[in-house]
Image 1 (cartoon, rainbow, N blue to C red):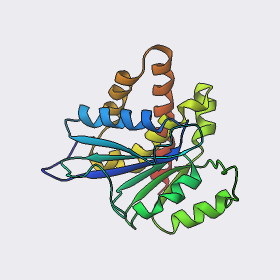
Image 2 (image 1 turned 135 degrees about the horizontal axis):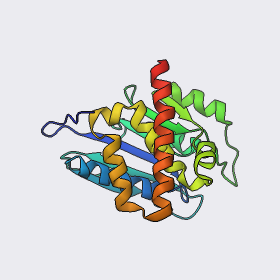
Image 3 (image 1 turned 45 degrees about the vertical axis):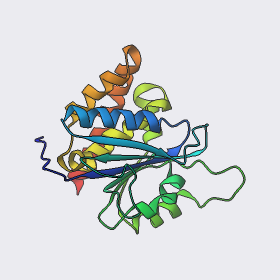
Image 4 (image 1 turned 60 degrees about the horizontal axis):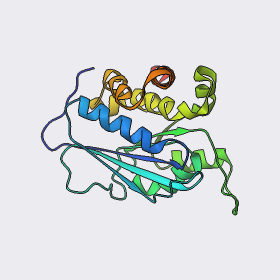
Length: 206
């Protein structure tokens, strides 16, 4: 895939989920992939409750951009590792936003939460939604749910045509090599490829 990127054009990606799902690692891999493609990138964490189960969002902005934070309605893509958190950050989406969401619900301990189908209907009414059971794919392909974040990355690359021709799978694979080593690298590459294949199958079906 040819990388097409001109001047001050930019692409903004919001990563949403909860602490313990590997959002910061996901942001680091995307950042390294973007740099491998020869582009500028800024990464900022907000609502940084990084403890397990706490709400977490990571803003990734590609290209020359004065602010590291995405404004409301300004996300080109949202990658949601958890459904309720994806819905929580829907204000960052516009009708042109692509959302890649994990079909996984982690209900808050002290409040009632809508069911997964209700969340999917609500999110899909606001943006172009693609969903995947990343947790199940990660366990099936790598034996651990920890790699679900890389399943989501591969899936997001596929459904967004490489973040709208910003990065390639080759960039992403090289980025994994800067973040992981040994067995972890092997498992995360497998997870990335699995998510990408799943995304391609959805795109091909139209």
